[in-house]
Image: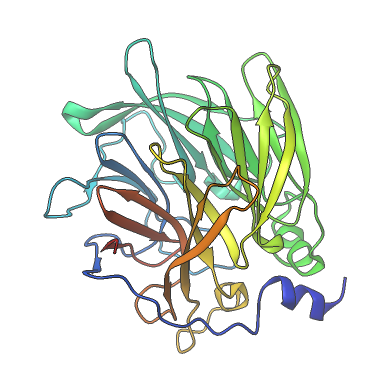
Length: 337
């Protein structure tokens, strides 16, 4: 794999343009990354903030989880209270997923956590009246060695992406990135079974599920694609198709009504990993409609050259609003046209 080929995978020569939306506002108190966002059906957005990721600028502060009521015109993020028995000092949240238990409507928050740059999954129960989280368990497993994102499919089961093959920080951050080999994978976890269900990703990143829970979507950053899988009864995955996006796809959110995919993208990842404040990485939001049809519609909804928003990683919609998060920068909320 040549250096030139690797730069192509990073889209290193692309210069992002501006394709802005109306009434965009940067959210307060979110200065150090809002890497992943999930929205409950009632418009309450959960935001994973403060990620420390090798090779990316970050703050010294521990990570946090915020909520934002998208029905409230003040657009004021509120930090969730964490339990005393939880190690906050090393909390380093990455991908997140929400699961609502159909039996009692309890809301569970699954968080990919990287204390000391390791990988583990934290499972919390959300207490809305107190705006707090109760920590239920920490999940560690040898197959969950470099987790990026997660989609919960039960109160203690999920699919997760591993973005790297190696655990060693040097091999992971430099050697593997520059080799650009398809060594990422997807793992299914439950208390009774843990198994690899898909492999061959240049950088497996965002993962999510269709509203009918029959399909799983996986973003491959350096392949610029979203993969569509059918879930089997034994939780294995069968590949259905691959959709070319034309950008470096990060997290995937799914509209529960339309089934549309909203993808936070990096128009030029070279600028993200080799950060220059005078020439910042841009942001891009892609919408994929009718993904299960013969001709999925891939549309750019937002683009910025990095002077408003640096390094977009996620985009989620509710009530005519678009909420865009970033790896290490701020968060933006806009009106959809």
